[in-house]
Image 1 (cartoon, rainbow, N blue to C red):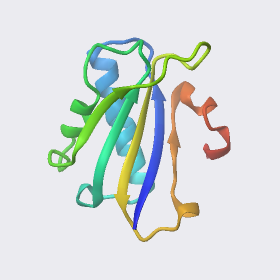
Image 2: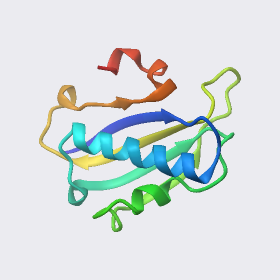
Image 3: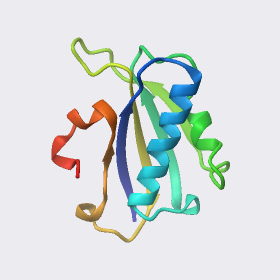
Image 4: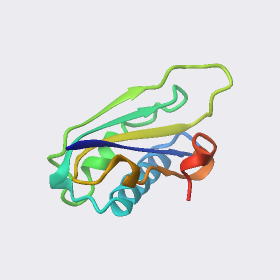
Length: 120
């Protein structure tokens, strides 16, 4: 079964260092919370709000040890007025036996406001 694991995080500024660091942090936390090894990840889609353009966040995921062969791509979120700014979202498609209700979605920094019902 392939399940989607969602996650989101915000950065303080649009810089290479911040984007790469926070994207790595989010991806690792998502994998840890769901006991995921890179071999079980079918693909990863990363989106950013349009105010992030300093680097490709996919670079951060590909640089995690063991993740270099995981297919990763980036895109921009819709530019909706009033939406959360400087936000990076990850959708990880994972082969797992877990039930949908047992998946742990991760929201960090100011992104906790996106889905407070899923934040532990």
